[in-house]
Length: 233
Image 1: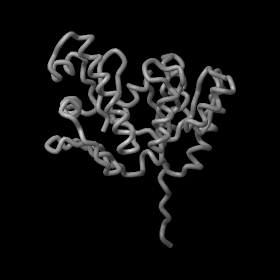
Image 2 (image 1 turned 90 degrees about the horizontal axis):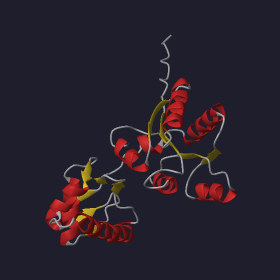
Image 3 (image 1 turned 30 degrees about the vertical axis):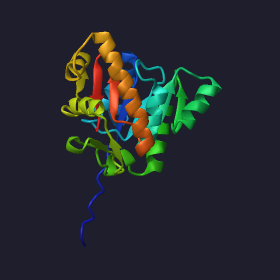
Image 4 (image 1 turned 135 degrees about the vertical axis):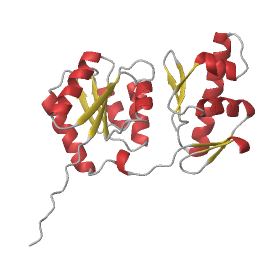
Protein backbone atom coordinates (compact mmCIF):
# COMPACT_ATOMS: atom_id res chain seq x y z
CA UNK A 1 0.00 0.00 0.00
CA UNK A 2 1.55 3.35 -0.99
CA UNK A 3 2.57 5.71 1.77
CA UNK A 4 0.64 8.95 2.00
CA UNK A 5 2.83 12.03 2.11
CA UNK A 6 2.00 14.50 4.86
CA UNK A 7 0.98 17.95 3.69
CA UNK A 8 3.69 20.42 4.70
CA UNK A 9 2.65 23.09 7.18
CA UNK A 10 2.77 26.59 5.73
CA UNK A 11 4.14 29.08 8.23
CA UNK A 12 2.47 32.45 7.77
CA UNK A 13 4.38 35.69 8.15
CA UNK A 14 2.96 38.66 10.07
CA UNK A 15 4.31 42.20 9.69
CA UNK A 16 3.90 44.40 12.77
CA UNK A 17 3.85 48.17 12.11
CA UNK A 18 4.09 49.78 15.54
CA UNK A 19 6.18 52.78 16.61
CA UNK A 20 6.48 51.73 20.28
CA UNK A 21 9.55 49.46 20.33
CA UNK A 22 8.57 47.53 23.48
CA UNK A 23 5.06 46.79 22.21
CA UNK A 24 6.40 45.87 18.77
CA UNK A 25 9.00 43.47 20.18
CA UNK A 26 6.53 41.88 22.61
CA UNK A 27 3.99 41.24 19.84
CA UNK A 28 6.65 39.82 17.49
CA UNK A 29 7.89 37.47 20.22
CA UNK A 30 4.37 36.30 21.03
CA UNK A 31 3.57 35.71 17.37
CA UNK A 32 6.78 33.69 16.97
CA UNK A 33 5.89 31.56 20.01
CA UNK A 34 2.44 31.05 18.48
CA UNK A 35 3.92 29.51 15.34
CA UNK A 36 4.15 32.50 13.00
CA UNK A 37 7.09 34.21 11.40
CA UNK A 38 7.04 37.84 12.48
CA UNK A 39 8.95 41.01 11.72
CA UNK A 40 8.36 44.56 12.84
CA UNK A 41 8.99 48.16 11.78
CA UNK A 42 8.17 51.52 13.36
CA UNK A 43 6.64 53.37 10.42
CA UNK A 44 4.73 52.99 7.17
CA UNK A 45 7.79 54.19 5.25
CA UNK A 46 10.00 51.51 6.81
CA UNK A 47 7.30 48.93 6.05
CA UNK A 48 7.32 49.75 2.32
CA UNK A 49 11.08 49.32 2.17
CA UNK A 50 11.08 46.10 4.24
CA UNK A 51 8.33 44.59 2.08
CA UNK A 52 10.73 44.53 -0.87
CA UNK A 53 12.84 41.96 0.97
CA UNK A 54 10.38 40.17 3.25
CA UNK A 55 6.95 38.66 2.70
CA UNK A 56 3.83 39.56 4.66
CA UNK A 57 0.74 37.36 4.71
CA UNK A 58 -0.98 39.80 7.07
CA UNK A 59 -0.13 43.21 8.52
CA UNK A 60 -0.86 44.31 12.07
CA UNK A 61 -1.00 48.11 12.03
CA UNK A 62 -1.06 50.82 14.70
CA UNK A 63 -2.85 54.01 13.67
CA UNK A 64 -0.64 56.53 15.50
CA UNK A 65 2.49 56.21 13.37
CA UNK A 66 5.18 58.82 12.67
CA UNK A 67 5.21 60.13 9.10
CA UNK A 68 2.44 58.54 7.02
CA UNK A 69 -0.40 57.69 9.40
CA UNK A 70 -1.67 54.18 9.98
CA UNK A 71 -5.07 54.78 8.36
CA UNK A 72 -3.38 55.70 5.07
CA UNK A 73 -1.27 52.54 5.27
CA UNK A 74 -4.38 50.43 5.91
CA UNK A 75 -6.00 51.83 2.76
CA UNK A 76 -2.94 51.12 0.62
CA UNK A 77 -2.62 47.54 1.90
CA UNK A 78 -6.31 46.85 1.38
CA UNK A 79 -5.97 48.05 -2.23
CA UNK A 80 -3.11 45.59 -2.71
CA UNK A 81 -5.05 42.67 -1.20
CA UNK A 82 -2.92 42.33 1.94
CA UNK A 83 -5.11 41.45 4.97
CA UNK A 84 -4.88 44.09 7.71
CA UNK A 85 -5.65 44.02 11.43
CA UNK A 86 -5.61 47.31 13.35
CA UNK A 87 -4.19 47.40 16.90
CA UNK A 88 -4.46 50.89 18.36
CA UNK A 89 -5.17 52.92 21.48
CA UNK A 90 -7.99 54.73 19.64
CA UNK A 91 -11.10 53.11 21.01
CA UNK A 92 -13.79 55.60 19.98
CA UNK A 93 -16.53 54.37 17.67
CA UNK A 94 -15.65 56.84 14.90
CA UNK A 95 -12.11 55.45 14.69
CA UNK A 96 -13.39 51.87 14.62
CA UNK A 97 -15.78 52.65 11.78
CA UNK A 98 -13.10 54.58 9.84
CA UNK A 99 -10.60 51.73 10.26
CA UNK A 100 -12.99 49.05 9.07
CA UNK A 101 -14.22 51.17 6.17
CA UNK A 102 -10.59 51.78 5.15
CA UNK A 103 -10.15 48.05 4.65
CA UNK A 104 -9.10 46.57 8.00
CA UNK A 105 -10.64 43.15 8.61
CA UNK A 106 -10.44 43.37 12.40
CA UNK A 107 -9.96 46.18 14.95
CA UNK A 108 -8.39 45.67 18.39
CA UNK A 109 -8.01 48.34 21.07
CA UNK A 110 -4.90 48.43 23.29
CA UNK A 111 -4.31 46.93 25.72
CA UNK A 112 -5.61 43.70 24.23
CA UNK A 113 -5.09 40.09 25.20
CA UNK A 114 -2.47 38.67 22.84
CA UNK A 115 -4.13 35.24 22.84
CA UNK A 116 -7.30 36.89 21.52
CA UNK A 117 -5.27 38.79 18.95
CA UNK A 118 -3.61 35.59 17.71
CA UNK A 119 -6.99 33.82 17.57
CA UNK A 120 -8.31 36.64 15.41
CA UNK A 121 -5.30 36.45 13.07
CA UNK A 122 -5.64 32.66 12.74
CA UNK A 123 -9.34 33.04 11.94
CA UNK A 124 -8.61 35.60 9.21
CA UNK A 125 -5.89 33.51 7.59
CA UNK A 126 -8.10 30.41 7.65
CA UNK A 127 -10.86 32.34 5.89
CA UNK A 128 -8.46 33.81 3.38
CA UNK A 129 -7.02 30.35 2.64
CA UNK A 130 -3.76 31.27 0.97
CA UNK A 131 -2.54 34.81 1.31
CA UNK A 132 -3.26 36.98 -1.71
CA UNK A 133 -0.13 38.95 -0.86
CA UNK A 134 2.25 36.03 -1.27
CA UNK A 135 0.54 33.78 -3.77
CA UNK A 136 -0.72 36.14 -6.47
CA UNK A 137 1.79 37.05 -9.14
CA UNK A 138 1.96 40.80 -9.58
CA UNK A 139 3.55 42.91 -12.27
CA UNK A 140 5.83 45.71 -11.19
CA UNK A 141 5.64 49.35 -12.22
CA UNK A 142 7.96 50.08 -15.16
CA UNK A 143 9.59 53.33 -16.20
CA UNK A 144 10.11 53.60 -19.96
CA UNK A 145 12.49 56.56 -20.01
CA UNK A 146 12.97 56.65 -23.79
CA UNK A 147 9.22 57.17 -24.23
CA UNK A 148 8.79 59.32 -21.09
CA UNK A 149 6.02 57.09 -19.72
CA UNK A 150 5.39 55.20 -16.49
CA UNK A 151 3.62 51.86 -17.00
CA UNK A 152 1.38 50.68 -14.15
CA UNK A 153 0.82 47.03 -13.13
CA UNK A 154 -2.56 47.16 -14.90
CA UNK A 155 -0.78 48.28 -18.10
CA UNK A 156 -2.03 51.87 -18.08
CA UNK A 157 0.36 54.59 -19.24
CA UNK A 158 1.21 57.83 -17.45
CA UNK A 159 2.78 60.42 -19.74
CA UNK A 160 5.61 62.24 -17.96
CA UNK A 161 6.86 65.79 -18.27
CA UNK A 162 10.62 66.37 -18.48
CA UNK A 163 10.82 67.22 -14.76
CA UNK A 164 8.67 64.24 -13.76
CA UNK A 165 10.86 61.95 -15.82
CA UNK A 166 13.98 63.41 -14.18
CA UNK A 167 12.56 62.75 -10.72
CA UNK A 168 11.42 59.19 -11.41
CA UNK A 169 14.66 58.31 -13.21
CA UNK A 170 16.62 59.38 -10.14
CA UNK A 171 14.41 57.31 -7.83
CA UNK A 172 14.17 54.27 -10.12
CA UNK A 173 17.97 53.86 -10.29
CA UNK A 174 17.90 52.40 -6.76
CA UNK A 175 14.44 50.83 -6.26
CA UNK A 176 13.69 50.06 -2.63
CA UNK A 177 16.45 52.34 -1.36
CA UNK A 178 15.94 55.77 0.12
CA UNK A 179 17.24 58.61 -2.06
CA UNK A 180 18.29 61.47 0.20
CA UNK A 181 16.95 65.01 -0.13
CA UNK A 182 20.38 66.31 -1.16
CA UNK A 183 20.73 63.67 -3.91
CA UNK A 184 17.29 64.49 -5.25
CA UNK A 185 18.00 68.21 -5.26
CA UNK A 186 21.32 67.69 -7.08
CA UNK A 187 19.67 65.51 -9.73
CA UNK A 188 16.96 68.11 -10.27
CA UNK A 189 19.36 71.00 -10.81
CA UNK A 190 20.36 72.07 -7.31
CA UNK A 191 19.37 75.24 -5.48
CA UNK A 192 18.51 76.28 -1.95
CA UNK A 193 17.81 73.08 0.01
CA UNK A 194 14.43 73.97 1.54
CA UNK A 195 13.04 75.76 -1.51
CA UNK A 196 14.32 73.11 -3.96
CA UNK A 197 12.88 70.20 -1.98
CA UNK A 198 9.58 72.05 -1.61
CA UNK A 199 9.41 72.26 -5.43
CA UNK A 200 10.13 68.52 -5.66
CA UNK A 201 7.35 67.76 -3.16
CA UNK A 202 4.88 69.95 -5.09
CA UNK A 203 5.83 68.23 -8.34
CA UNK A 204 5.46 64.81 -6.71
CA UNK A 205 2.03 65.76 -5.39
CA UNK A 206 0.85 66.66 -8.91
CA UNK A 207 2.31 63.42 -10.28
CA UNK A 208 0.52 61.39 -7.58
CA UNK A 209 -2.82 62.91 -8.58
CA UNK A 210 -2.16 62.38 -12.28
CA UNK A 211 -1.11 58.75 -11.74
CA UNK A 212 -4.21 57.99 -9.67
CA UNK A 213 -6.46 59.54 -12.35
CA UNK A 214 -4.73 57.77 -15.25
CA UNK A 215 -4.28 54.32 -13.69
CA UNK A 216 -6.56 54.05 -10.67
CA UNK A 217 -3.46 53.14 -8.63
CA UNK A 218 -1.25 55.07 -6.22
CA UNK A 219 2.16 56.23 -7.42
CA UNK A 220 4.78 53.84 -5.95
CA UNK A 221 6.86 56.61 -4.37
CA UNK A 222 6.95 56.87 -0.59
CA UNK A 223 8.28 59.68 1.58
CA UNK A 224 10.59 58.44 4.33
CA UNK A 225 10.13 60.91 7.16
CA UNK A 226 13.11 63.22 7.54
CA UNK A 227 15.26 61.29 5.04
CA UNK A 228 14.02 61.46 1.46
CA UNK A 229 12.00 59.42 -1.05
CA UNK A 230 11.92 55.77 -2.09
CA UNK A 231 10.59 54.15 -5.28
CA UNK A 232 8.73 50.91 -4.45
CA UNK A 233 7.87 49.31 -7.79
